[in-house]
Amino acid sequence: MSRLRFLLLGLLLVPSLLASCHLHAQSSKKLPPYFRQWIDEDVPYIITQAERREFLKLQTDDERERYIQLFWESRNPTPHSSINTFKEEHYRRLAYVRANFGDDRYNDGWRTDMGRVYITLGAPQQTAKYHQGMATRPVEIWFYQSPSPALPAYFNLVFYKRSEADPYTLYSPRTDGPTNIVTNDAHDPAQALHTIDQSMGAEATHAMVSLLPGEPISIDHPEPTMDSDLLLDAVRNLPEQKLEKQRIERQRARSAEVVTSSIFTGFNQTELQTVVLHDDRGLSSVHYLVLNQKPDAGLIGTLPDKRTGYDLTLLTHVTTDSGKAIYERKEQLVGVVSPDAANTGRERRFAAEGRLPLVPGNYVVEAVLTNNLTHASSRTSTRVSVPSATSDTIAISGLMAYRGRPSQTPREQLPFTVAGLRFAPRGEQQVELHAGESLPLVYQLWLPQHEKIVTPAAAASGKPEMVHMHYTLGTVALSGGDPDRVEEDQDVPVTDVDRAGNLVNGHSLDTMNLQQGTYRLVVRATESGSAHSAYATMTVKIVPSLTPVEMWTAYGDEQQHPLWQDDLLRGLAAEAVENDSEATACYRRVLAAKPDAVDAQSRLNALTKKATSHIPGE
Image (tube, rainbow, N blue to C red; front, side):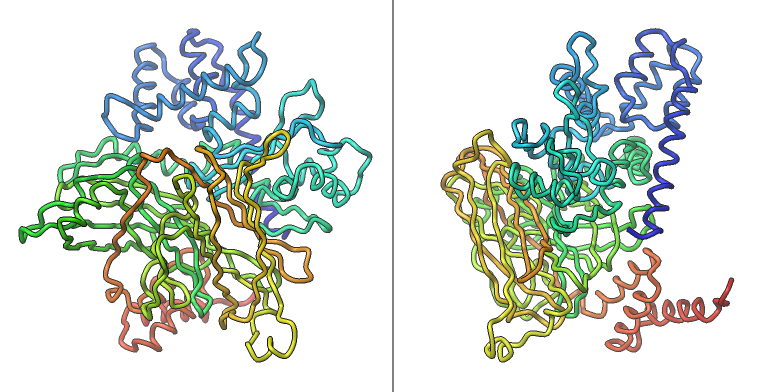
């Protein structure tokens, strides 16, 4: 990768090594056994170095007891609640790793790589176990949807045994490489990858080159980027990541708040799901769902005018991954429903829909959903990565599960609208279904530059270029294979690509043979005549028939968000991620559509002054 990426990795690793040395310098040997175990064995992977230093400076046991209470309260999802779900989950994880990893004689499961990851990130959403591979060492792959804004939205972690007697060790595509996974004499990474592909399959092969499922790879010319090592460093040192520190600080501040206008129900009531889509200008928006975990009968009630309906406020804050505020968007979700619809809605899960215009970069999105009828609020956040447009390799957006039939609409500002079609969302990174339900999917293919100008007439003159799609739905791995796994292929002509290189595609998968449980959907896109592939994934949960999976959604008035306002918000985002040229282009588009846009003009003037004041060579 680039020298800049190499330097960035160095900047991340050096503080980690220094912190490790500093840990040994701050001895806990003089502490009483109870407090020594707490600092060295109970919380070493979740405490920051600053917190550790503070604790070791304390002089009395009373001070230490009080500090431990404050430590857990600062991480309490529901401040001042008698039940601290974070603390309970942490000690559940500790008990699990002590029982399942390491040597029983020494109770050291927490010291192992698997134990450390489990304590830090929790149970993976999916695991793949290749313990009896052909010409390969024992391998396990853990798939995660990000539990922290400091980590990618979803990723794999690979563990392997260097020998049968060794514990499972975290694998790095760059430091270890596929040649360390095979047991034959392969010294060439491509040759080793072909062995892994034959023994374990495509998913494992991809993970040996990149821990990020969406990152394109070539099996014949594997070139691991620094991104996987950056991920591993962030996992190993999660408490020291800036976003994680900021999250803890925000949590600590909230624990001190006295909320009078709303009753906050905490972080566990809702989840935030996102997907990045492009418009026909190639500009990005994050479409998102704030999804209630369970049906909430209190969302539909009596409005001030005595009619039956809902009255919600969706307040969304966007910051950079370094914590710099960019903008916030406030939506009023108000509607009147019939008595029959009210009864149905109370039995279904609810999701608020939204859309955030952004430019390529990494962001943190926090959403607060308030029921104005009961004044109850819930808050949730996630990290979002908006990828840069690629000019030479195919890419794929996130996957959207939807319900019903898509409807045609000219209103491109609606959430989950693409190429003139509005989709009623059911889930992005994750979806819940009953066994036997079909799973309709839609997504965008982002085609390389050489495929972006394809007309039907040109396609008719010869064989149109195709993108080959492969769908896999099932358990990631079972000894002896998974007989119920769904595997389907689809060839997609690129004749309907738009001017920006976007191609909307859909497919429906059958879940008839799947039993209750959690499954992984992997979609692979390969362009004609290329070894490069792009991947997208989704977690699919088959739940009991009595578990509610149906949902209803609401969104704000898109007329409040004209196209020029989208470009204004993208300009703010571009400035925040220090992309002045993109910000300038955004503000110029605003002024072309709305010449009296004062904010855009003033910001454009400031950027122009900044550019002209630069002296070459300084």
